[in-house]
Image (cartoon, rainbow, N blue to C red; front, side, top):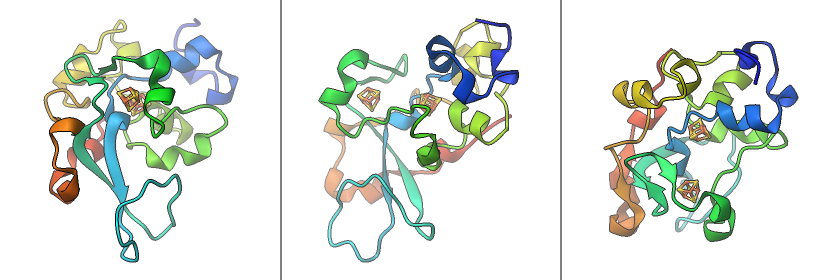
Length: 164
Ligand code: SF4
Ligand code: SF4
């Protein structure tokens, strides 16, 4: 990979390897989120939202997440095992508003560059990201331990934080 390729290439022009390297591994996309909809009778999965709706993140993490390393324990099979698992591609970048503001793809898509704590700027290590509190480490409840009937109690503000 070219040195600092993310500064000279658009997301569209990146190779597969470069695209994968852009992910910071924060695992915020492995958190349950929901959209406020006063008309809904009960919670239901969705893959779209209206412009006047708000997305809420929770501290509930997918059961397949290793919450210490913030990595998926079944990465290769994740989409079969968890149909809601988000897989960003060049084709679905338009849906990036679902992602947290600190998501590296969203940052690049919005022209904000990579933050100082990103692993690509820290010799591939996640240490700075964890230290700055930008990953989910130490902040989550596994889905299997959460009371999903009362998911509002798990609403969290921290996944929306970003740091340049
Ligand atoms: S399947 Fe893996 S990548 Fe997908 S949400 Fe769960 S832990 Fe995250
Ligand atoms: S939120 Fe974005 S940068 Fe963070 S793990 Fe998910 S896809 Fe990667």
